[in-house]
Length: 206
Length: 206
Image 1: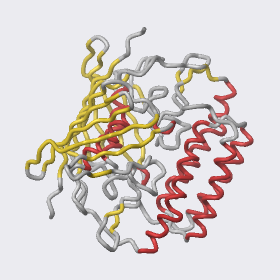
Image 2 (image 1 turned 135 degrees about the horizontal axis):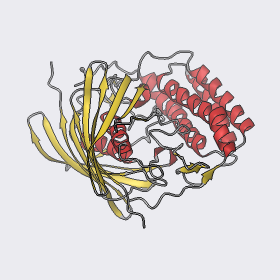
Image 3 (image 1 turned 180 degrees about the vertical axis):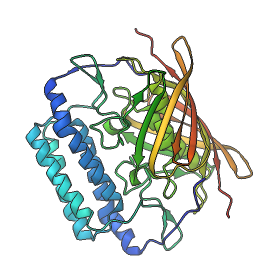
Image 4 (image 1 turned 90 degrees about the vertical axis):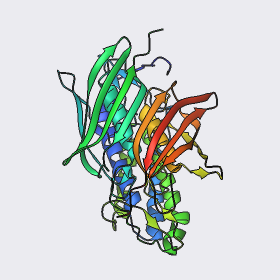
């Protein structure tokens, strides 16, 4: 069980920066990741590109927060998981997923996974499917300011999930005390590729 | 089930490039990802860094392979999953994990996960734990040139996995025809944080 969430309040200045610079910066790094995997340029060009990247990193590193981003709160109490590996707008590893909550409890997201998420050739890594499903199923148990943590997750792979546009969805099967039982799947245009069931917990307030 | 692996043979020139430029390039992008998440520099510096990144991407994109990296073979038949999201040396999203196979069948890896893999504050995202375990358990069923794909994966979270140095290991419980039953875990210095069991399949040759 992780320790209680630390929630420093994020200033309006940071929120403005998110829209005007952090989000475009992370998107730029996402494009760079894709090009790094797929480039076929010669060694001299690779080295020249690396120098530019190192200079960018140097600029950004002039002032770094210690550790990791964590989860912060805006002035109006919304939690901002900008560093999250699945949904974090400032984390270039995150696709990032935009999670939608319907009034009936359905959680869904539509997203595209490219070369950076590959396992079997042309296909999403089975572990990435598990990661997406962990997050989407967990989101059914989400309460503002009190994210759920995973107790157990079971994933069943029906067929390979092709790289490209995908949809994941999940719903709550039942709630027992601090436990939320959820199920869901990932699908491509031809139908479901992976199913999952999970139990998610709200750490008791201490 | 994914289609049969396509294995274009990788030239010696590409292998030399891996060591001298691809690996250092991907490592540079990994440092950039971390700085992108943790930077606290002002908006003007962020914008200047983004310009450098975009120029690097432009250079690398002058010649891109279509689609994704896939899995290739070297002249001596070793498979090179350089684009793989977990172990790919050319994929900046991959930590990357270096997988060790012991003579007794044990598979293990030691690795460090930083800010880019965060879920709960200061902790590895549960989905990343599932991703790592999917790969490490699957590696117990690996045969040269015939990677296994996941049939089912069940993950049980004992406590939060802190960001930092970690170890994952797995072993085969039993083999039944094309199915390999494996189990394993992730541990930090204080012990096991997550356990997993999985069934992995070797697609039949068609």
